[in-house]
Image (cartoon, rainbow, N blue to C red):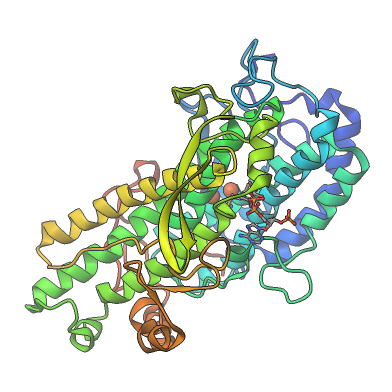
Length: 481
Ligand code: BYC
Ligand code: FE
Ligand code: FE
């Protein structure tokens, strides 16, 4: 069988030969109704009958893997898709470097591996739950289609992790798979596992910031799991990354178009000062300082997803060969790191200092630094938009100690520029740094749905090109009456 071909004859499309893997097929078929129930209850509210112009993966060949068509979301063909197997792949890092990649779960690492798969799996449905109300306030049919595309793919990412649990972890894998459908974002009793996935996504600017910053954490985590010595996990994550590129695009261009619209409106109205908030808001656009506060919030929440700066968990998963570094195979070193160090920002005697830590325990930090660099490149592109239109403003990433709940800085207050302040200082200036309820109310006041093809809400510019090269007035979503 052509390895890149996806079998659509089974209830669950796949390229892992499920038709001949009866036990796993049955486990997945048993899980399927619960998934559909979850999707109907917790998926996009109010649009389950709409026809959405979605892409579906038909191959795992990165060139030409998707086809586009109108689909009702509950009929989307969620499938199990793994990147093709690399013959003779070896483990690239840690204690087992050079040994053949594992095709089965190594017994000694079973618990560690299961935890990684469960955490990854938990984030996927969580994001769908967080975004479920957005359809009602979409700024255009184009944007409406994009959030739904992201949602169905996050649903597929859940399938990807559930497949690993059911194929490789037996009964406790099936139990974990069931629990992935039971936790709920923001629920007091059964919350999702990681902090950022229990926050609300109250408006479209939040959604675009989330896909820029939090899906980008997803990208980094998937990149590091794609390095895994456990080959099925590596192959699963490699294919998920193909889809993740669109999520990055939705976030970056969503925020970029919002910035563009604000700057253009300021210019047209002859407003030079970005802090002339009332006048700018009066134009029906979001002022840049409010966007900076949203950015500060989403970046800091996303930094928390990397875990502690110094972590023995992280050292253990690296040494075991389960979770590598970003682009591990391109790094020039011994890939074991037993004698290496890595600089980490820490709190030392009440001051923020750079300290050399053993590189193994600083693995989370290394990934987070790569993440920060990736975020910064996106900000540079946003700043180019501001510059090109000629507004005097620059977006900046806040200091990594700012507004943290996990790790070194969780018990201190750090300003966006990296100064430690006391409670009084924090309370005095907090509203300059993080979104206020007034900011939230204003943004929500702009969130009026626009459903006429080719039309856009006042606060966001149209995209430069359509999805699948469709013309500007294409009807991306046919909303059922
Ligand atoms: N919230 O040693 P430490 C995505 C816990 S996003 C709550 O510092 P470690 C997506 C930790 O569990 C990518 N608890 O951390 C994006 C540990 O507890 P135990 C998701 C936290 O283990 C958008 C203790 O604190 N994938 O795909 O090195 C839309 C000490 O932990 C948090 C992954 O994250 C937190 N933020 O690293 C859709 C990949 N942080 O075990 C999807 C898998 C830490 O001592 N996960 N704790 O009881 C991992 O690699 C790691 O588990 C973590 C934490 C990076 C999460
Ligand atoms: Fe995902
Ligand atoms: Fe994503």
